Length: 245
Length: 321
Image 1 (cartoon, rainbow over the protein chains, first blue to last red):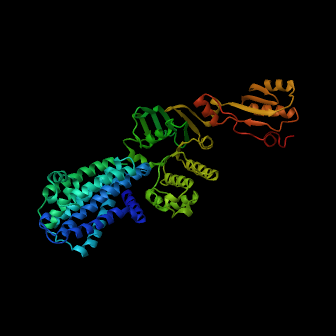
Image 2 (tube, rainbow over the protein chains, first blue to last red; image 1 turned 90 degrees about the vertical axis):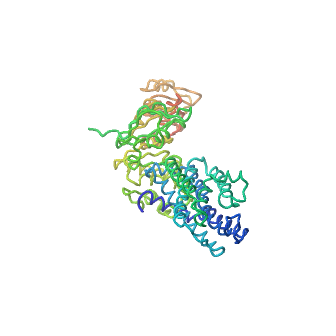
């Protein structure tokens, strides 16, 4: 790849492999918490989990944790650090096309997400087994749409926050409530009504619904899927505008 | 017919909130020249070149760079420019050779040759964070020159370089200019401006307050040379003779120390007079006005005190007695 985007993607991938600790949160956190929480609730179908095996409920939910960790924690810190240190100005001054950096980050973010999701499934499948996918095409649409939405949110946060430390603080502050309310925490049925109302419109809740429900045969979750699609388009447009070189 | 100016700036204004940084600046950079932008910290030099590069949007004014508007036509313009920015970095773990690959376009020169030329060939596999300040500067310069730019903007070109590396970089800039590349140089190093620039623009408070060849600026704003020497009991006739010399403006005596000030041509006349009035003083010092003096005079309304001493025996009397 000799285009600007190609050169940026190649450099970013090389940098990631050289600094694997950066990826720890994206790769290790979902796997570790999935194994813990899956073990805690067991594998007996439960009404609180819509009559589904709780471990499978979480397997179907945790791919979105990977996506959120990439978008809300890894990318904002990475981008804010680039901006803080003048790396983006250097790219701009060197004549990199206007959208090349945003597109490259989107590609790298999606590659990271895909790899981390594959690793999550590879580790959890032997332990809990993989739930049958009831509505594959909806899951196949929701996952990349969600990845695009959260990677774009991450790029946007990285372009807005003033420093890498601020990006880390804000990223974690957004990630953990989203994680607990929308994917890796207790199922909605055991939440109080107020908490459930707060959790409902969160982007990660929408994405998790859009993936989990069709995967486990709990319904099409069309509303959530539309919400994720709108989010993906809006976040991508704003992120591309904000990170134009 | 002469070539059009590569950079034309008219009435440029840029403020950061209430602080006006560039205030109605006009600037021309003719094709094929090395033009220096000098001035005190905060004069607006870096903001000016950032507007020229299209990295900042001006509040007012017009800019044409290589025929393009840097704000609306940045996409066409930037590939034609090479930039060495004042404050910027590369990713810490990016290797030198990878940086060359990353920044190379289809027009790129041989990165290996540039690495050899700037003494970084042995650091090809080193990551950016392990480079010294001088090595980073040289790498940035390589990146600025890599894609055969028509205009190169160098902001604090030799900051952090040792004297030998500075000379090496200066030679590279001269070579680049000989090949036809126009250079806009922002610097605090007056010797660098004098060594490289055919024309210099002096900025203060966001405006160009004077411009011209370095020698012309020195002539206009710091033409006073100062000669000092000791002479116990100087003959009155000698002092009278010195006062009468063409260009002498002032002769001052404080004990045995005599100070003569005047146009720089007095250096030759006073030297000749001293040789005639044996014995010549052994502590003769001559302050030749420089661009730095001109800048100080322009910025503060005063000239600096002696910064360069020419040993009497070697420069003025050696081999002539």
